[in-house]
Length: 324
Image (cartoon, rainbow, N blue to C red; front, side, top):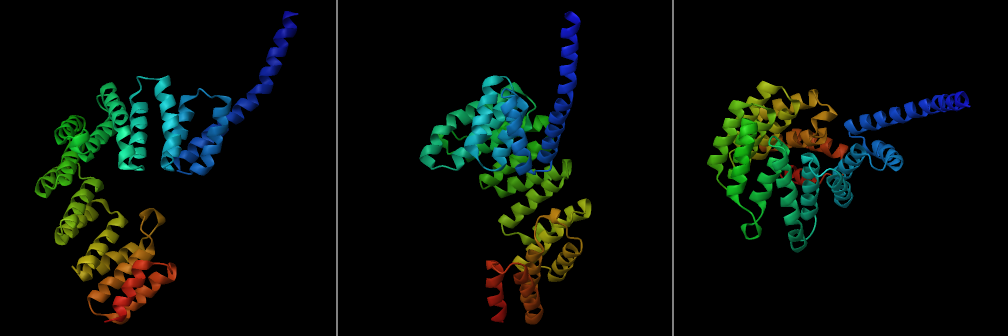
């Protein structure tokens, strides 16, 4: 009898192994889709898996992340809340839950948003307490305290304190956070100093971008072009060619250099560069308009409109070119 039972168990195992292998393959495929940000394909596989294994935390986190990418904050909040309840000492779960609550607060009226503040603060600070090296949480707290009005808990001093903590984990993030605080508080010279320190220490494309954006915001296009040019020389990112061309077009500055960079952008364009070709055509039209070369400007603006007929900025620009 025992041999018969053992035989049946072994036989059942042989039947189940292929099914298990298929399930594992499908899950891996869903993870691959997720990494590729092909969420429409990943989501149904994860949902199907969760029906079979409703307590699986990894799958709930994936589905919460997918909801977050889709700005479905209520669904994201539900998944992250369940994760926090199931593992109260997980810093990342608290961070994601607090972050989703924060995004939900931004999507509702100011009066309703106030009701979320206490929970946002609790979960982000809990995440920071649980993980002394959690960079994303500290960035979220910097933004939370600097953007929140003082009357309902905002505090520049608390934002600076978390920026200091960031600096202990990563000097670059510390300088960037202090630059962000200074910029938000309308202290551009302090922000410039911190961003330059971030470039000196790290020199990533992001550090150059923060400084260039600061210069643009404060009507310093020459400095913005110089900063973006330095980044281009170091990082060779094609998108930077567009940024230089954009500044040149907007501020009627260094037109030949702007034309050269936009031509390089178009010659080396790939979808990963982010900005569609039509916008590069539009910027070229602006530069040639600034130079008073009406016919060349019309050629480029028509090319921009050919790719996107309902291109309002290009339509307006064409009117200005025709008026030359």
